Amino acid sequence: MSRFWSPFVKDLVPYVPGEQPKLNRLVKLNTNENPYGPSPKALAAMAAELNDDLRLYPDPNSDRLKQAVADHYGVETAQVFVGNGSDEVLAHIFHGLLQHDAPLLFPDISYSFYPVYCGLYGIAYEQVPLDEQFQIRIADYAKPNGGIIFPNPNAPTGCLLPLDAVEALLTAHPDSLVVVDEAYIDFGGDSAIALVSRFDNLLVTQTLSKSRSLAGLRVGLAVGHPDLIEALERIKNSFNSYPLDRAAIAGASAAFDDREYFDATRQKVIDSREHLAAQLEAKGFEVLPSAANFIFVRHPQQDAAELAARLREHGVIVRHFKQARIAQFLRITVGTPEMNQALLDALV
Ligand SMILES: *Cc1c(COP(=O)(O)O)cnc(C)c1O
Image (cartoon, rainbow, N blue to C red; front, side, top):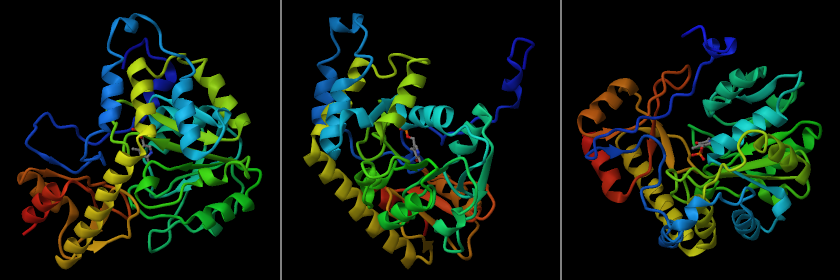
């Protein structure tokens, strides 16, 4: 702390990301990255951008990328916002669309960045407990609120709220903005983007970090009614005119265009998830049903923190959250079959 800090900074509680170890030998199953590389077409498109044109600013509106997203989902470009990772998109959403008198609602077990943004922007919030099976129960959200946000599938549980339940929630809260954070939807659910043209109170966010394997590029997006998108554009253009660089616009667009690679790699992850879940159940673990690229597991006899420490000694890192209700769970990212086998071997 120093006397130069703006007063509110001393009370900020920042998000703590999963470890990015400097050691290469580790089997990294802790931050839900995709074990397969990005689309070769995305890599080629980015390489083609690395030339003298980098002296020029990128397109401030990322039109090429908005068009690729719009084409992929069958929406209008005016319904699409893009940003520097979905974390930045979420920050703009909290800032521009979720600052109201009534508290923002989100699950008690959820993406731990949400309370951080509430702290940054001074937003009151209320956490709504998941039910005993760690599922979102939409009836529990029937209370005064200034908006509702949740990941779907939820993080870190991996559990999916089916699309008809999302629709029921939107219908029950016509005067609340409902933000569905679909960071993992491509691994097992139907996107609520199918509903944006019918619900002006729906905003869906997605990221290229997981299913498109571009966590290092930092690209995320939101899809919703043009009036919601306009609020985000206002914030963005009051904050950073060029959140996406030339390589990011080209690479992300090419990744959206390459549907074949996308489908092939996400299917491999889904198949590995089912295999890994079955193997862990055979070893006595309880595995929550996952629609994501990770699984959330606990062992009835083994302490989660000790398990995580033991795995680390074997060179395998997973995520453990020291948090009420889930302190005995581990979140394990689905890797390649070889990585998953290394995890299973370390558990003997
Ligand atoms: C990974 C993740 C994000 C952030 O994605 P980036 O685009 O990499 O910033 C957002 N929400 C949830 C629930 C995530 O797990």
